[in-house]
Image (cartoon, rainbow, N blue to C red):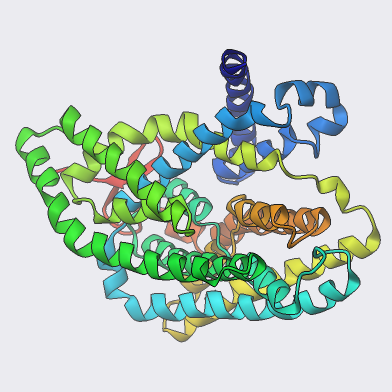
Length: 436
């Protein structure tokens, strides 16, 4: 019954918020971003832990089937809103100033893991354990390559936000590289699904449609949206009608990019980047950020974790494969990006820090993996292995970043300097640009 589903959703929401709050506090105590705790909380609430310790309770809280549709929908809304906020605070000037570096790191962080992942897929396909029936060598190579190359853009954005790097040169460079790498990975996935479904039109629509959408929104769209910024500055507040207009545009853009096969988060991010900066972006962030990060975004991480069954990795051979793919992931993404940045004359500490941020995959990779699992491209065993790789690389990101870079950007009193944060001022959730 719809009413029963809605009532049950409130129970799920209460359990999720408590679990994410507790896990987030624990993560912060051990030097990890809160988002890492939320990611692990999702796995804990799923079949991997709660389902083993108290299966009846886990099944009651999160029953399979249509009962989780409301949870899934709310999670997608939170993810779209959050990526829009990240786009609002995306400083294009930093990308322009370091376009060469961003291009070099993006290319290295995409082609190298794609190649290494593709090579690793060949022996895995031959074993008959990791890929579905009828999957060709080319499909397996492209899918595993895309899985290794993906950066988990929302996870990267949240880590940058919590580290106080939003708007800084390093943070913006990482976001630019992550967005490019993920866009290419999703295009590769679109090709894989098109081949799997014998529909090449699907891949063409995704790639061409995404490019046209980006170009139109960042040119004509930016000029048209400028009126909202001017009206907000004149009123010194964002009006209800302006807020409604923005939300309507956001949902329409998310729908469009999801429909053409690129995924809704990129539509939200590009729209945010096209919005007027300065006072308007600050007002809009203040309106949307608290509810998004505290209520809606944790649902995304938890929903993804509910589909993870780590217990499937239960033999020495499977653990060896997991370790091998972890090495491939770290070398292909983190090391390759760090080397490319260093070759572009980025200082060593910043290069390694950038590599550590780019190496974080997080649960956004589960979206890609879930698509592959549902399409029959990969088996539940490979799904579980790649989830472990995603968790491990995300857990590595913060300690490596702090060791090589974070601890060296502290002021004498223990706080971040204005120079380090690019003129950002502290707020409750990280940093935001000073309002004029």
